[in-house]
Length: 181
Length: 179
Image 1 (tube, rainbow over the protein chains, first blue to last red):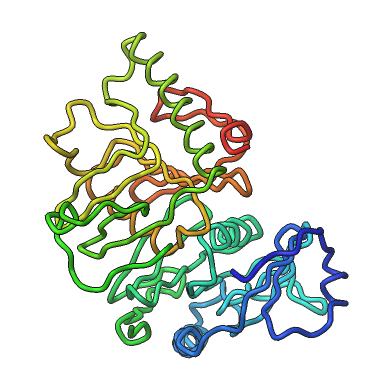
Image 2 (image 1 turned 180 degrees about the vertical axis):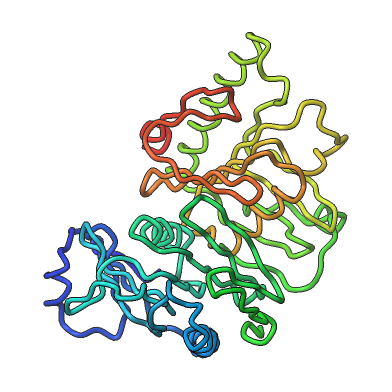
């Protein structure tokens, strides 16, 4: 993680900051800046995005994805208590509240792990997503071909190779194809 | 995390390495070296150790800690598949096997997070501990005074004061331990 700014910022402060090449997030008013993601990280996020678009579109067409909204790459979500989080990939809730920005957590937040994302930072993001309404949080470890799924009921599970997602109406995702080291 | 050394290393290789100021662990034969713990990290780990010592000693006196062994600070545990892990604090199983080294996971492994411990590294350790017999793994985040408790398939996030079921309902004050 690149670094944090000691003073507490409001979301309005964040909106007024000058443009930056860094990804800026707010966690309880603490500004967190990440360096631009490396291409390998981008490739993994793109692969996951494309798979989710395909799966969710098919599920919507079959009428079995009423609990899911739209799939996004790098969209931000505004949380209570001066929070602004940007999962690498996300699926909104259907009809999720939206002003200038989506409010609350998406239904699914996907975080692709890179060296800049410390254990502390990821732990905080998982906690915030689940507290603000996420149905699942996926933490992706490309180097190990693994996805960890955290749910608000306090369960977690680790998947490698084939991953059958209950959230995605039983769709099977081949991790070997999208998490090539 | 300081770095990893390429190439598979056996536990016997690890034993033959020269002394190092780095904390050396093995994860599936991969050597992982962590820089010396900083003072804040060391102090938090020490407070966990002292609290757990107190709790387990009292539980033994009441005859209520039959599922727990001894409390250790930075004790190493040897695993199959060339593994050697050193939780910051641990409680062994009663009569845990091991001659020169404890074998397999302790009953409780406590990891205090520092910047060097990446998410990838910590999650691999959690997996190893749980796969090899840990009853619980505690991951403590001093910056925000949180404790994640992992058991197979479940996790719980605590702050403030919580009662530990593993420790017979003993209370753990995270604001004090992670001050």
